[in-house]
Image (tube, rainbow, N blue to C red; front, side, top):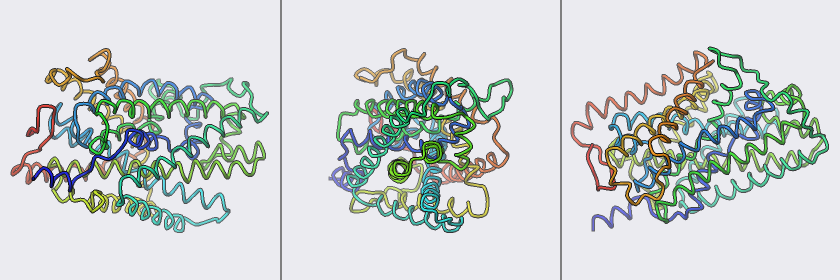
Length: 469
């Protein structure tokens, strides 16, 4: 009877595989038409090549995540993997690091949407007005996130596929515009990033492109609600990476041939480089509006919803497994966690409001790639540890990583290298912002160590049953 009550009050198994795939893909596929000038500034005409190479670099990590997600049937991802593989302290650290990337997305995206609205309709809104629009969007997302999960994932899937369709069509239109030329691809490795410690700026820029790829790790946050065989999570994880990597590569190949590095960047100083190029270089008026609607308004909404759902479920898992107070596990009539939603709304609103007076959010956003890469690297170490300690768990694992520990080690080395590259050239403000965020995590961790964990243990559901840590 207790189990039935727990099932009724907790997260419900109701998600088809396609929706878990769209949550991950929608989370990843975000900045293609807003941060296109940033990516092009990093890697120039060779941005498409950088995206192709980053897709290959991410795949080993995605494969290891696919293996791990097949072992554990509850939300938690990095929290679970690193607690079981190493210890609860590393589990807390890894989950806090990955949330550094996730939490920065909603406030940054809503400000981008508000900026696009102001720019497109010539409203010339000041920062305060843009901020108010951002707050309103966050409140709408918050109220949506309290509704039934089916409503959320279907809304996100619609936004995602509209974005994908618009992006692919735009790429084809650019190729057929009559203005596209291979000559614009001649200087593939041109970049505005300077060489640091002997490492070419283009390589550093490619490492920073991990930002448009993180999001596949949201799949383990949704497995508890997945109404499909757990082994199918590989299709959602690797499918999301391959889908986004392919579209990124194709789209930026189409954009790069449109004009020279200098000309394209000159029109996209404040973002929206491709939209500006279509307007100024090609003289188009209608399609840039349609593309902006599909890619900015709908595409970014898909990303917000994907990361919002994932953060809420990570916080819920932390409450369920005794990393946070039990109040984080309370759900409403739609089986949506209440306190995690409120907590996330408070954080995102704070970040938006702080932007008005300081560069805290911008600085914090600069190092989210670093936090994400570190979380991936730690998780790869835990994957090796779990495999060596619990070989019996893998007997029927259809997602067993080919190459074994070589692949897991390769994934770890790649992520350590990317984390290092992401630190190069970062300003003092970025490190201060990251330190503030980690400082909050340390305070929570200390409270757990000194107070809560003295009375109660961390509980993790494993293939061998529920275990204490």
